Image 1 (spheres, rainbow, N blue to C red):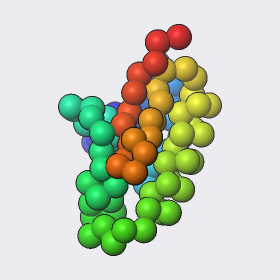
Image 2 (tube, rainbow, N blue to C red; image 1 turned 30 degrees about the horizontal axis):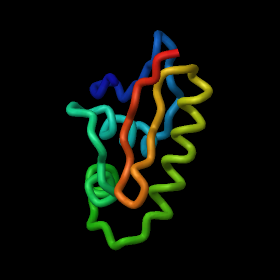
Image 3 (cartoon, rainbow, N blue to C red; image 1 turned 45 degrees about the horizontal axis):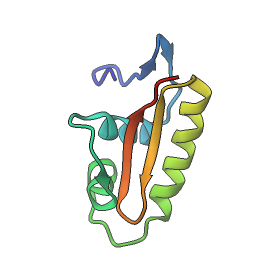
Length: 92
Protein backbone atom coordinates (compact mmCIF):
# COMPACT_ATOMS: atom_id res chain seq x y z
CA UNK A 1 0.00 0.00 0.00
CA UNK A 2 1.51 3.30 -1.12
CA UNK A 3 -0.43 5.92 0.81
CA UNK A 4 1.38 8.93 -0.68
CA UNK A 5 0.45 7.94 -4.24
CA UNK A 6 -2.79 6.16 -3.35
CA UNK A 7 -1.61 2.94 -5.03
CA UNK A 8 -1.99 -0.69 -4.09
CA UNK A 9 0.02 -3.53 -5.56
CA UNK A 10 0.03 -7.26 -4.98
CA UNK A 11 2.91 -9.45 -6.14
CA UNK A 12 4.12 -6.72 -8.46
CA UNK A 13 0.71 -6.14 -10.05
CA UNK A 14 -1.15 -2.89 -9.64
CA UNK A 15 -4.64 -3.22 -8.18
CA UNK A 16 -7.20 -0.98 -9.86
CA UNK A 17 -9.21 0.14 -6.85
CA UNK A 18 -11.70 2.91 -6.28
CA UNK A 19 -10.94 5.37 -3.50
CA UNK A 20 -13.39 3.53 -1.23
CA UNK A 21 -11.88 0.12 -1.98
CA UNK A 22 -8.39 1.50 -1.37
CA UNK A 23 -9.45 2.87 2.02
CA UNK A 24 -11.01 -0.48 2.96
CA UNK A 25 -7.93 -2.45 1.95
CA UNK A 26 -5.62 0.02 3.70
CA UNK A 27 -7.61 -0.32 6.91
CA UNK A 28 -7.69 -4.11 6.75
CA UNK A 29 -3.95 -4.25 6.00
CA UNK A 30 -3.01 -2.01 8.93
CA UNK A 31 -0.96 -3.98 11.47
CA UNK A 32 -1.87 -5.81 13.50
CA UNK A 33 -4.10 -7.49 10.95
CA UNK A 34 -6.89 -8.58 13.24
CA UNK A 35 -10.64 -8.60 12.91
CA UNK A 36 -12.00 -5.18 12.10
CA UNK A 37 -15.46 -4.74 13.54
CA UNK A 38 -18.16 -3.20 11.39
CA UNK A 39 -18.10 -0.13 13.62
CA UNK A 40 -14.33 0.32 13.41
CA UNK A 41 -14.24 -0.16 9.62
CA UNK A 42 -17.13 2.22 9.10
CA UNK A 43 -15.37 4.90 11.13
CA UNK A 44 -12.01 4.37 9.40
CA UNK A 45 -13.40 4.36 5.86
CA UNK A 46 -16.45 6.60 5.93
CA UNK A 47 -15.41 8.70 8.90
CA UNK A 48 -18.83 8.67 10.44
CA UNK A 49 -20.80 7.04 13.16
CA UNK A 50 -21.96 3.51 12.50
CA UNK A 51 -25.75 3.41 12.65
CA UNK A 52 -26.15 -0.36 12.42
CA UNK A 53 -26.81 -0.73 8.67
CA UNK A 54 -24.04 -2.92 7.26
CA UNK A 55 -25.36 -3.10 3.67
CA UNK A 56 -23.02 -0.41 2.27
CA UNK A 57 -20.04 -2.10 3.95
CA UNK A 58 -21.00 -5.57 2.70
CA UNK A 59 -21.39 -4.23 -0.82
CA UNK A 60 -17.99 -2.51 -0.79
CA UNK A 61 -16.32 -5.67 0.59
CA UNK A 62 -17.96 -7.73 -2.17
CA UNK A 63 -16.43 -5.52 -4.88
CA UNK A 64 -13.03 -5.48 -3.17
CA UNK A 65 -13.05 -9.28 -2.85
CA UNK A 66 -13.77 -9.60 -6.56
CA UNK A 67 -10.79 -7.41 -7.44
CA UNK A 68 -8.51 -9.30 -5.07
CA UNK A 69 -9.53 -12.61 -6.68
CA UNK A 70 -8.73 -11.17 -10.11
CA UNK A 71 -5.27 -10.16 -8.84
CA UNK A 72 -4.41 -13.77 -8.04
CA UNK A 73 -4.01 -16.08 -5.09
CA UNK A 74 -3.00 -14.90 -1.71
CA UNK A 75 -5.09 -12.09 -0.30
CA UNK A 76 -8.49 -13.00 1.07
CA UNK A 77 -11.00 -11.02 3.09
CA UNK A 78 -12.49 -13.34 5.66
CA UNK A 79 -15.82 -12.73 7.35
CA UNK A 80 -16.13 -12.92 11.11
CA UNK A 81 -19.85 -13.54 11.09
CA UNK A 82 -21.77 -10.86 12.95
CA UNK A 83 -18.55 -9.05 13.92
CA UNK A 84 -16.59 -7.79 10.92
CA UNK A 85 -13.79 -8.69 8.53
CA UNK A 86 -10.13 -9.71 8.53
CA UNK A 87 -7.50 -9.65 5.78
CA UNK A 88 -5.79 -13.00 5.46
CA UNK A 89 -2.92 -14.36 3.44
CA UNK A 90 -3.46 -17.82 2.02
CA UNK A 91 -0.58 -20.00 0.95
CA UNK A 92 -1.18 -21.70 -2.42
